[in-house]
Amino acid sequence: MINILTDKLPDVYVLSDGRELAFDTDYRLWIKIELLLQDDDIAPDHKQITAVRLVFPDENFSIELFRFVMWFFRCGEPHRDTGRTSRKYYSAGFDAPYIFAAFMQQYGVDLTACNMHWWKYRALFKGLKDTKFNDIVSWRAEDIDIDLPESRREFLYEMQELYELPKTLSERQRYERAQKFLNGEDT
Image 1 (tube, helix red, strand yellow):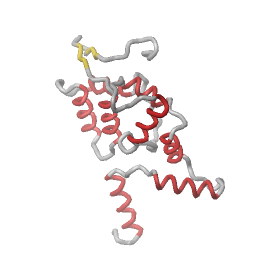
Image 2: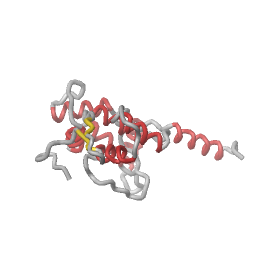
Image 3: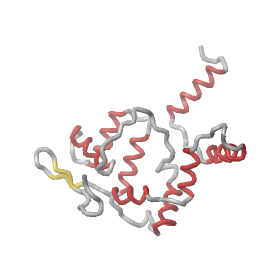
Image 4: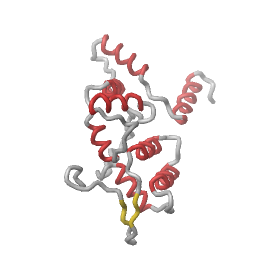
């Protein structure tokens, strides 16, 4: 495991045949990969091929390259399969202004004017606190339980509606089918 404090951050991948492939480590590219991987409207095999093409445009797709892309994307952390579908609480696309503002507020970093290694970006991202972005993510993540005071429930309903992430096309289609079924329009 690479230590962000003591080790050189990766910017080259050594293939099993010994060839070295330099690649773009800038956070902007890896945010695009994050958005790609989170898009439920894209088939998994297409996500894999596209991710490898984004990182290694001159190489043919291989599982070896895809595994490396995922390893780098996870900042060297092992894959953790929780066995359940995780709810999304933020989107780097939809929440971009809030993420930008949070980095500016907390670190004085203008994300539009800097190049930053993905692993550095992720470390700073994980350290964000006391920003509007953190508030929004917290509101989205909080379960609205009947045991909460009514004022808190109303506030959370309002905030979750106001800051709701856009639905993917497939989610919208499932919702529309369910609505038709409930209205007796689907047989």
